[in-house]
Amino acid sequence: MKKILFACLLFVGVSQYAEAQLQFGLKAGVNYNSDSFSDVSNDVLNGAESRTGYHAGIWFRAKLPVVGLYLRPELVYTELSNDVVYDNNTLQRTTDFKFRKIDVPVLLGKKVLGIGNIFAGPSFQYILSSDFGLSDLSEVSISEFSLGVQLGAGVEFGRLGIDVRWERGLSKSETKFVDNVINSEVNFDTRVNQIIFGISYRL
Image 1 (cartoon, one colour):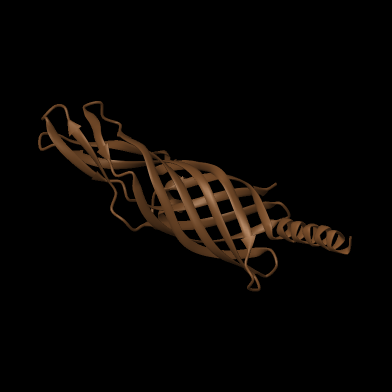
Image 2 (cartoon, rainbow, N blue to C red):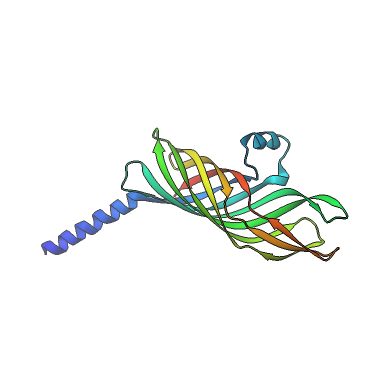
């Protein structure tokens, strides 16, 4: 009887500890295709439609047995645009390039000053699709997997969190297109650097 009671108490204690140590929630925000915060501030004032995108997903956070440190994996859908100049040796045109991907950042973070946090870690990416804004370019193949790194900081007010992060692509990711006008193959590097503004809500 004592063993059963002890097992029940242990189970309740472990359950409460796990509940206290593991958190999860929803997140969404705006992505900007740039590696410079000054570019973001200047272009946002002018609309910045050709280089912006959005993301939405879920996040988890688990406290580590080190004071203030936590592990935060995320599962995020991202859609991002960029304006590029395409030259097929006959005509130079500026067009938009869009791609859609699944991001899985695995971030190591630390709480600071009670409401703040800083974090960094790798971001694993699976490219779903990509396309140019030109009808005479058709996609042939795409490098589906790529790797990046994220650095950022944020604040939390109760269940609501706000953060900003910088992401840099590490591995080369190419999409191959065929120009139907000149019947020639075009390779485009889909690796991007981006500034990410996000809002999260803990459930």
